[in-house]
Amino acid sequence: MSVMVVRKKVTRKWEKLPGRNTFCCDGRVMMARQKGIFYLTLFLILGTCTLFFAFECRYLAVQLSPAIPVFAALLFLFSMATLLRTSFSDPGVIPRALPDEAAFIEMEIEATNGAVPQGQRPPPRIKNFQINNQIVKLKYCYTCKIFRPPRASHCSICDNCVERFDHHCPWVGNCVGKRNYRYFYLFILSLSLLTIYVFAFNIVYVALKSLKIGFLETLKETPGTVLEVLICFFTLWSVVGLTGFHTFLVALNQTTNEDIKGSWTGKNRVQNPYSHGNIVKNCCEVLCGPLPPSVLDRRGILPLEESGSRPPSTQETGSSLLPQSPAPTEHLNSNEMPEDSNTPEEMPPPEPPGPPQEVTEAEK
Image (cartoon, rainbow, N blue to C red):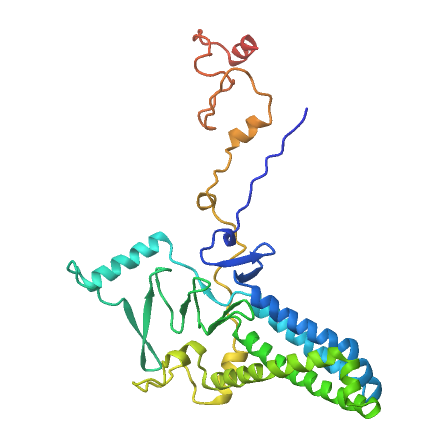
């Protein structure tokens, strides 16, 4: 007798999350949908370092020091680790309001603002919040149906509200926010050092080879070195400049979004309520503070009502494991289930009461 095993399909929460993100490895990896420039970043870093390790490092290790390729390998591994950590992690996405929560917020807003006459523009949906004796406005997000926390903003590319939103970086293929900003900063810092390192030792390599065979012959024999020098030269200015800009922001405990909007340096000259007034304290808070956990619960199991599938009942599962009779049967609850499996239409007429054993034997 063959037995069929009924397996329930488990639906994870990441499969139903709104927004424009892609997930891999059963929700463990989270990225934006636009990942083309991220692949270009990987190609440039891997390609340049592969050429450097394959050609220049062996020559420099013999002529100068074996520590040159070791230090280059450490910088390369650290840059790749921080890049992947920035690209594959949740930047701090804030979950959208559930229908009941959104309806409750709407009721609160209507009770506060009152009825708006037809044709008149409703007042802005803003809440005032005090931080360090300074009033900060919490704006309402019409997409997520929530009042955004301080420093949060809605990313138009990923279509999500991100906590302590800094910017959306296409080079890493993800938003940069509260949960991955430190890794982004460490990535651009280590990439700057790696670019300077490779560029400098490529120049040293060309100089050493030129002393033996001449400059033009060196360029002809090492086209890979010429390609590395060109890539590093044009990359150096942008990466080093970006690192300097974010170092300035970290020292002030400020985000790129706040700097672009002029939140603390505009016409009102409002001071930054998040700054401690000390560079060391600001750097420690941004780069060394506790990392909050993700509030998305991407790998959590979605309730069956929300996943859109109905679980098979115990009676349906049990009946699928038994041979089916040609007569239609009706499933009853455990409290209403009779002793035999006949339907009410098929049950014989009532007989005089007798011992339960005799009734059972007669039915058999």
